[in-house]
Length: 320
Image 1 (cartoon, rainbow, N blue to C red):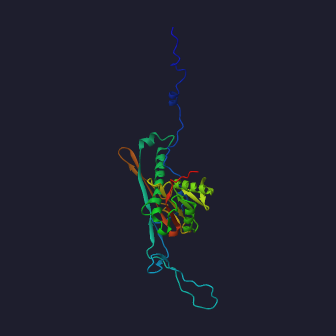
Image 2 (image 1 turned 60 degrees about the horizontal axis):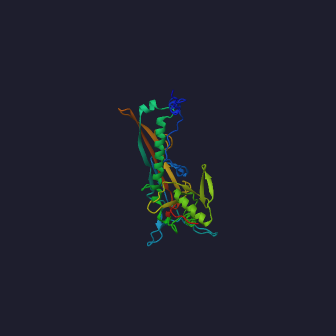
Image 3 (image 1 turned 180 degrees about the vertical axis):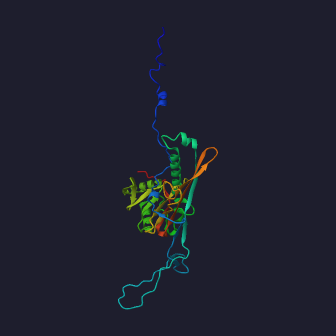
């Protein structure tokens, strides 16, 4: 009698077959392109009506016929006089054509098969997850547009007098000090690509002045002169020469700084202010459509609220 071949004998139920009878633990869909978007969280948002925000400013005039620099019309005052005299007469004069900021729009049509939502809706709500991932993508585009849009993006609206070039290419403490001297009225935070922050950290380490870290919203941020450096990958890095820009801003309407604009209370609003989701019907294939719109913009209330250090080199390393 031949002995049994134990090498091919199965002594228990195959785990792969047994798995077919079990309930497995599932995660919600993961999306690698989602970023923290701290900038959108830290930015003060101001509600507007009819999709428009008007920035009224004092009228400016040229200091001399040969000068191209314009300054605000001064308000005439007198001081240090005790005797009787004629007081100066004055009034703050406003610009006749103030800047208007119109809300921008991000939109898409989300489609989902009714069979999917009928049959495969547990344990994870299919429509809810489709909405969540689409909204995350819309928020990512919102942050990109706020920084890079050709018409209203921050990097394209910095006043010429508020732009600086680095001394030696890499962002140094001296460069950030000069930027702070530009935006000196209550600067809120620097905004920089993570590579730019790393490059600044290397320059600080080289000089023996490691920046202090603070904890905001449960995450650590390095600071310079007490002003946090907020990472944002929407500030682009040039692939050819490894250069990028660093922004410094004052924020808030009261501080005459940088503000975000939105219009809460729009019809079919969902998840967040100014984001709407409208039912677009079901076609003859059983596909449900949802029209999703996100309204937003950004405004720089005064020129000195935003400064930029341009063309900083993030590819410089030091050999010790």
